[in-house]
Image (spheres, one colour):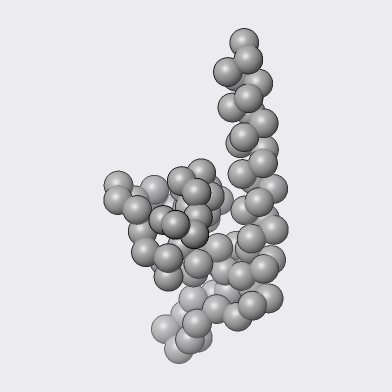
Length: 78
């Protein structure tokens, strides 16, 4: 995806404890996963996620991605 790196969209699925798709998901699917990390419930009648849930989810995802990048750097340094 042009909006999210591979680590970001895969990280969203890992944090949500869902299987990582074999193909790159749509931006809508990734944004919904991220919003769920921020408290969006995603029920049938809920509509689209709001700015607050997307923002909170992005904060969680960013921390996770930074941790993954640091772990990869440590692993690759050895």
